[in-house]
Length: 225
Image (cartoon, rainbow, N blue to C red; front, side):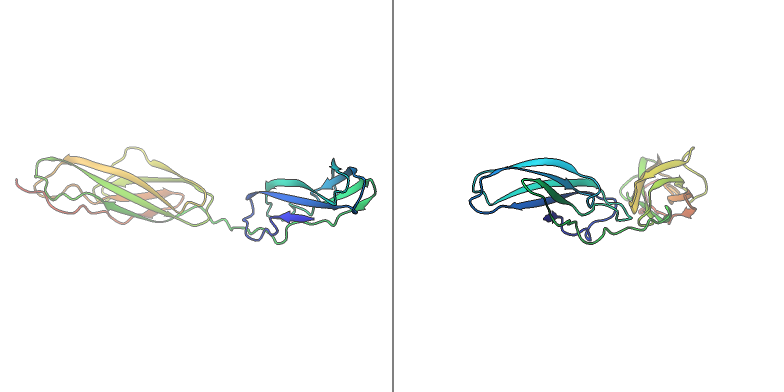
């Protein structure tokens, strides 16, 4: 018997894997050939399926492959050793063989935001005071590793947190095991000569935990009156 993969130690539990068992039947030289009837198992002999291999006269070996497929359980109950039980032309059982080792489990951390940074990505330099300008802010959320994912709920401000710039809270979906997520928001308006806008961009997370971002400060100043 042979089995591939030979070891499960490089696989994470939950991974979908196909295990291929290969049985090699050996026959004496100058045999007359004929059908070989057998049962095969992938669960250590507790259940079995049947098949037949036809051997030609003088053939000294034949191979038969069968498989187990599924997600590797964390309790290591599958895949089990596999093998064959020949019933004709005579009775003989193969050794039972399965992959060695065990899949590895990945601990799941609670879904939470560990930090948020906000950056203003456009400079006001080169734009005239009194002209219309759009500042683009990018918020980057850092999420705890190995989390199941979830929804980040937050508000954002373009005036250093003095008031929310969005009417309703934003809901940002994060997938399982994702460690970063981004969200872009804008300020659009007329550039004042006193350079009070666009202001500092801030994000305030309310769920799954409470976090306030660093401030994203626009650079440069408008020119003229």
